[in-house]
Image 1 (tube, rainbow, N blue to C red):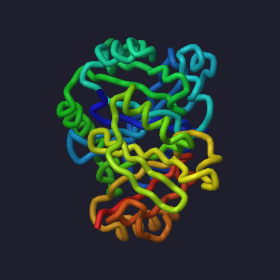
Image 2 (tube, rainbow, N blue to C red):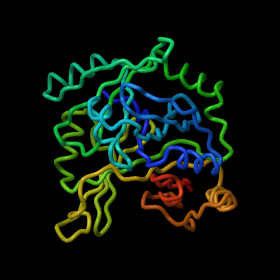
Image 3 (cartoon, rainbow, N blue to C red):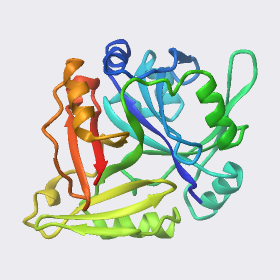
Image 4 (spheres, rainbow, N blue to C red):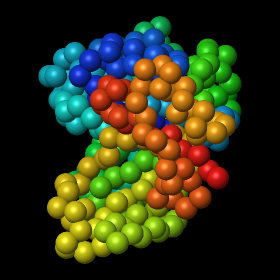
Length: 288
């Protein structure tokens, strides 16, 4: 059902300062767009080296809490990583399938002020089985057309070397139940598993990226007491050596951690703290 991770939603207390931080790092954002009916304003950071892995980070701030509640987006009233949007080939067919399975997914259309279509999107009512907002969406253009248009509009004119979204993570204390829901209801089976002494990572491959479900190895694991949530961190593969990206980030006033071996075999990683980017951390990843 899910073809790709289309976007990540992060609610920030101050859209202007969060945007300024990303731009200081060397990343291009779309102009502010105010959704009158939804009560939010957004800016988006597009990343991808081709049409297959184009996705965006959506920074959102609330200007009308009542409109947010009325539109079914109460998750946006709390700062932090609030949702994931997944691209599908036919949003109406996917929504009908989910509704038939007992998980309503009403489709709404979002248009520009002059009337052209932006997106058809459905919020999936997961009944609490997923601890963040899940949407499925379809655009009026192909992914190739969308990539070409994004490039023509300058959305990918970054001076910081982000290549593609590699993975995201969600805390899942009941990891077996979470995996069953993703597989049986949403049609996303487990693709791989990584274990440490305290942590189970179940990898769900969705298009070119991975959603990791983080669970405990047992009742004594620190993960067992953590609430289910979408982690406020996105991992991006960088173009070129990780050390060069880290040096560039430090030159521009950020404090990424020293590069180290990643949990994923064959990777090195460094992290820019969430506080420096308006509330969502940025892990920089290199495959070696």
